[in-house]
Length: 121
Image (cartoon, rainbow, N blue to C red; front, side):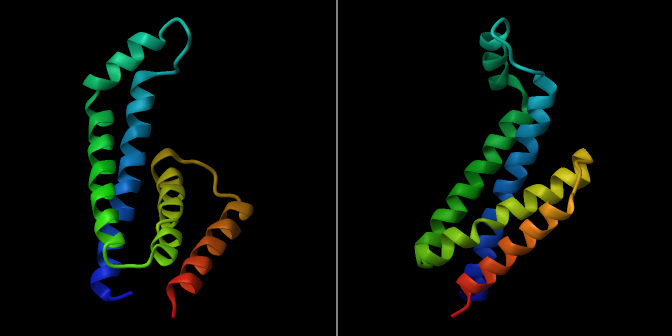
């Protein structure tokens, strides 16, 4: 993977991770969905700025990933995109004060090691 391809992949990962962050923030604003409020909350999603920002970020991530796929083998690009999981866990810990257990830390290390092994030639 060239530096340009890696940079494009990084844009896809960051944009998709930000999409998850904003969707979570929007979900917290909307509140928990129940059978009594489901229709109202589903309609409210269309006017919640953080939800819309999350969807936009996901769109940017998808476009960047498609551009990666035009340059990189799927067998390298798809596993490399799993870095989204790493970024999402880090954001969960930093933004939402979620726990980072030893098991999660080991799992993140395994994901990162796997990406390195798959992406190296």
